[in-house]
Image (cartoon, rainbow, N blue to C red; front, side, top):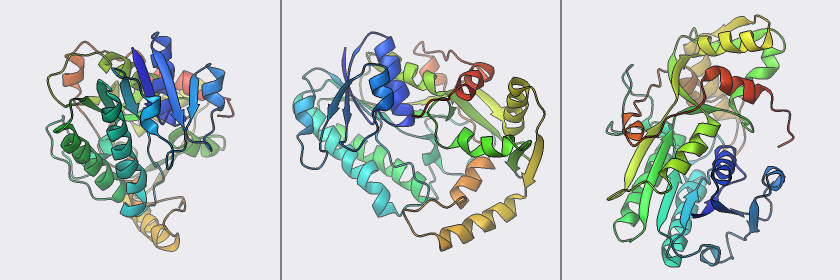
Length: 320
């Protein structure tokens, strides 16, 4: 199938484009003029540089194709208005361009963070009502509602994928934040590190999109996706095992971390990158478990376990 990918220079977007190409689909990557396309060039991707403001996005979308939107502003410290420019405004622009060009299906990369942190300690599924607390979660939830409203008046099919936390090559947040301390023999955790969360290999997120590409649906569908459940201490143990050395737990009390995050949000202006925010603290100190039975019932199974994920991610020496 012809697939048009927006956001293919991003972390998960690059994995989606790569897995779609591996599966043999014709993939067209739409990128901004200022985007870093080093990785896409390395896999010989079909790159189309487009001015998202003044360019005609529909001109790059073929009739009957599938459009995959992985665009996102992943900065942690933004106002709702700043975050909406990509999450809402650009997503709406891409959806309308795809519908106008006669695309068959629109797939949206979303996030489990839209559920907020007022969740039970057990796994939840797609039916659990989001209760977003922070801007990152609020705008993610709003983006899905906007897409569902747009789909009501469009002949184009809509699928939304909510991946769990992920690890993999080209990640710019999780492992890169941990590795400097690991080199000093320390593994940072908040509130003891026993919090359990669902995780997946970034390659499996790409494989999920391959699976969903031509999955028969009768209306808009939302799918959760994960591979395995672990704790931060499980992650530490497996990294120690792979690196062949034992790190020491550096525990930060949860209350102290939340206080520091709040202070840093106050001191740093919107659009900057504080070393810690309350959203980051709650992400690292909450049980974040998901039930992906709906996706698995369609025949999709993740391929990679934690050991395989970390072997691949920790071997990443690339400049992209």
